[in-house]
Amino acid sequence: MKPEKILMCRPDYFEVNYSGNEFMKDNIGKVDKNSALKQWEDLKSVYESLGFEVILIPPGEGLVDMVFTANQSLPFVDKNGNKSVILSKMKNEQRKEEVRHFRKFYENLGYRVLELPGDVEYFESMGDCVIDFQRNILFGGYGFRTQEITYDYISNYTDFKVVKLKLINPFLYHLDTCLSVLNSETAVIAENAFDEDSLKELRSSFSKVITADTDENLKYFVCNCHCPDGKNVIVQRGSRIFSKDIKESGFSLIETETTEFIKSGGSVFCMKLMFY
Ligand code: ARG
Picture 1 (cartoon, rainbow, N blue to C red):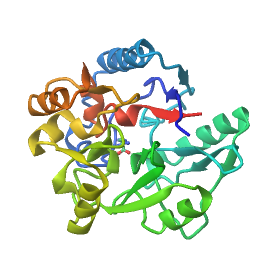
Picture 2: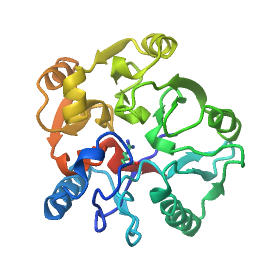
Picture 3: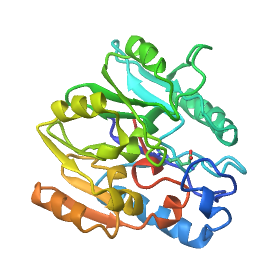
Picture 4: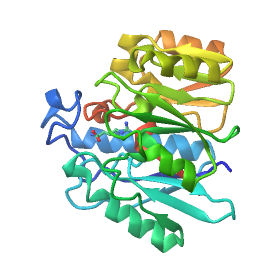
């Protein structure tokens, strides 16, 4: 069952004040907060203009990365039709507190809230899980922010078919920085993100694979695009090769600005969560 609501978090406390990934390193103290808020509001409007209901989770004071709502939880519907969620275990200390806010949010909505057992130390949910809802396949990235063992539990808790993918490039540290599923036939991938077996697995999973240009992906986070409806592809403005490939594949391109968030290592896909 495909989620239809969008969850976002206002970037009231957003900034880069620690070095949590390769992008943050050089951007400490460099976020323009007014511009970040404007970019976030524009992205919210894009979803609304496509007819999606955008729900907001209140930002936790001082939680600079809470705006990246893809990372704290994995919502799903269980076999009996119950709305359920698996909570993340954030890798970086600076983000652990965010999960508490998400737990409260889901409890208020009456979700069944699941936690991973003690042998899982880190798991960053929809940063590393990219789902094809039509075929019920969950592509699960591991290596940087999520441990491989997590997927044994996810296979048990959910009825997704899980396809594990090993990430090997520190710049592409979440699966959503190197894979976007546009629909059941089409995916965008960054080839330099995966080990050989994972790349083979991915290529055989889709009849059409759009390969992102390496430089464009680093600059515009094109693999972090989001196609919420199988037709429209929302992405950071500026790519040439990617834009052309997307249009030629029959999708509509919606370009928007997320440059302030790219300073922190995230773009469109990271700034929202689809939930029930
Ligand atoms: N600064 C955040 C972090 O390092 C960025 C998260 C980006 N999110 C994503 N889904 N790729 O955790």
